[in-house]
Image 1 (cartoon, helix red, strand yellow):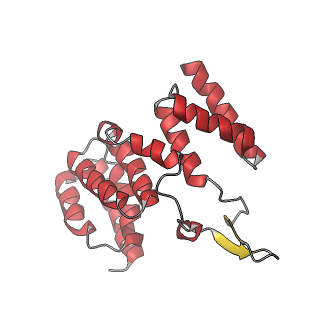
Image 2: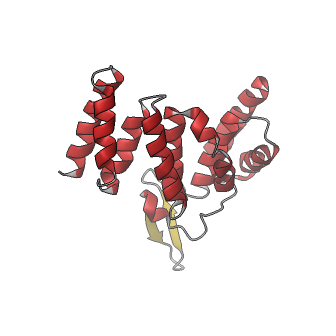
Image 3: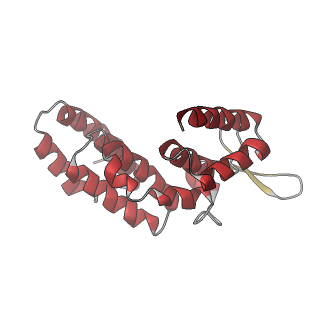
Length: 191
């Protein structure tokens, strides 16, 4: 089966399962085959499955893939963690310190932004530069994502607040600095 056919079928099946139509059978069937899917079909499948909030089998599958991906690509693990949190916040919270490690940049050393769809160019001095298709720079993208996610879970965490404050003051993009400032203002109002 082609990748796009797999995840489109999974989207429909998980919608039916969310509506209570043969939920257990659908979950069992998807779980029994998802390990054979190609990456391009697995990641959307994890997202669609995560909509089955509270489903223990789905949470177990997502947690297993999260832990497996930690070994070779922390960003894929992060994407799966987001799905795990959507499905089962309690299970995901057991691994929340992983977000702080990503926010510090741990495991990202030497990771090519091309893996995430960034565009690489070479400047007139031969230096490689990366940017997203909308020309936004790539610097610290995943670290920011992880810090913001963790901050929303724990707005009083000192380490994450220090990291966010640093980016709020020093990030090269004004819109990023502004968004972090607004986020921290909202978080301080809650804490």
